[in-house]
Length: 125
Image 1 (cartoon, helix red, strand yellow):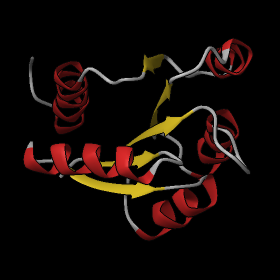
Image 2 (cartoon, one colour; image 1 turned 135 degrees about the horizontal axis):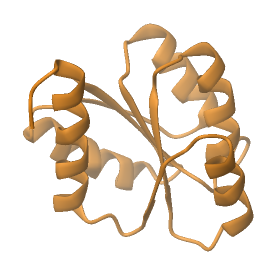
Image 3 (cartoon, rainbow, N blue to C red; image 1 turned 180 degrees about the vertical axis):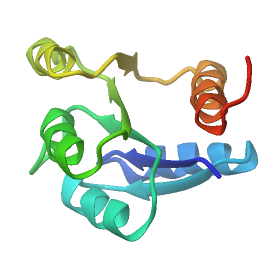
């Protein structure tokens, strides 16, 4: 099973993504803060982290820095509704490969996550 954690300080947005991902066959969790995300990752195996960039307490790049050390191999994707150029550049300089703009294109998101799932499962694609 391929599990995804959605971190967004707008719970309705995260819940909608979790619902869609669940329908598409993913195990999906949601968190509304970096602290809550870390707690979930310590309790459940997570393969992919989709986190908002701009959040109170801990931004998405700070969360990435913490997870990179504690959960090596975790795929992290940033999402943003704002031009958080400096934070995004920091994240990419530190290893984040993908940044998605909100509103998220659901079809693209499912395709992207499915590709990562197939890669993890060792399927040829």
